[in-house]
Length: 110
Image 1 (tube, rainbow, N blue to C red):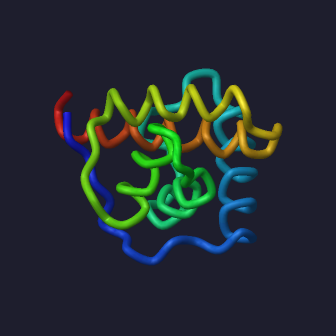
Image 2: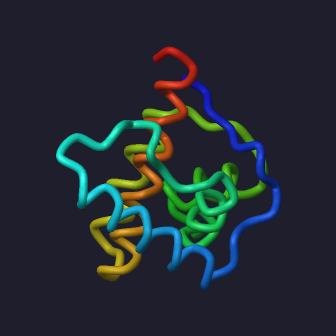
């Protein structure tokens, strides 16, 4: 399923850190957090911007970061790949980005 982001202005590093921490705290306090509980669009774009690189997954992140639409399955694969090399903070941000992707798919009926 093709997904895109409405936000064209990425979140700052501080906004990303705060949003990831708040989301993980909220999700952790719930037994069954809803799929709709996710990061804001601008944070999703900002996270993707951190992982832009010449690799295939980095190029997909770049396309998303620049406002293009991407395949949700490819995006989740890219996220899993990047998590293998990310710092603990980066891993947490990518986890939140994967939740955002799942929420978009759910919203579109996938």
